[in-house]
Image (cartoon, rainbow, N blue to C red):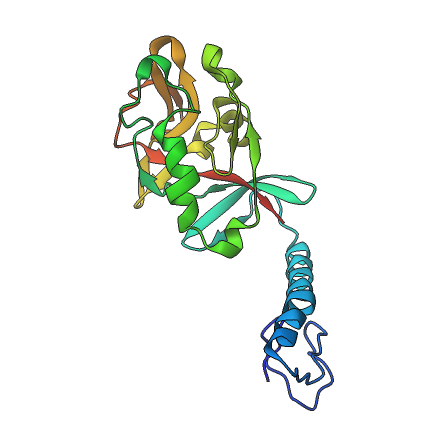
Length: 224
């Protein structure tokens, strides 16, 4: 029979699963409501504790590469029970702005932020989405348009790119196996220009916000 917690096959003669220790004791429920109550109050909590235990055993560390869904993610930071991760490679190309008023453009108002926190987010598997921490994203680099935002998914700032990738070579990323520039959320408000990491890893702050050929590397805080 298959364990209801870890899905390991074990013999009915066994008193409990040898992997996770769970036993349903061959329970038979008189009604469907009783079965649903057992599932909600026993199975789900036990399963969550088991998953949390297995994640803790993996001991995720900075620079680890982890896989969720279609994407591979690089661990940039670990704090207590959560980790900051970014896609290892560029996942696609989009402009920072799809035509918003560039006189008042900011990370808060740009279409790229909207895309990441809606369409991109909903494409992630639910068991991954529920572990993403909502984050107070600081935008101090954006001068008079420096409103902080509450985001689930975001891009790195200039400061974060320098902190977590402290050499040009570490900032280089690929799209379809070719080096490609990628967006930061920072802006050069004075000139109404965007900031990108170039194909050779340098930070450029004079980029066209309507550039359709710039890549994106989503970042997020993940509960471990």
